[in-house]
Length: 70
Image (tube, rainbow, N blue to C red; front, side):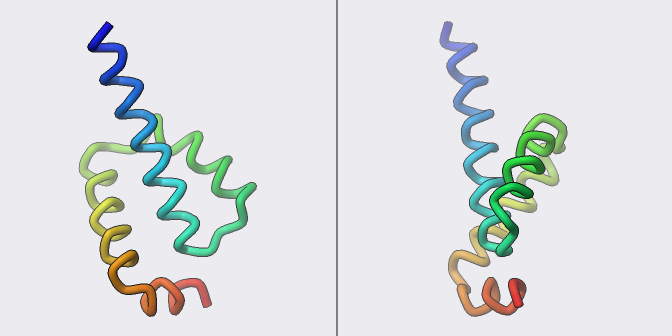
């Protein structure tokens, strides 16, 4: 159904954004995979929006992302 497709798209988007965000922080892939599986199902919309904003900032400021990783 269209509703099911919308839910699946939302979950896929959450998974992708959380994975990208944690990679920007330089976390190991095994940690990312484990954490994303929990986060994508239990994170509030407000926290997800905050992480999305921070991910956009880190994407626009790779020097900051590098400093966070070190």
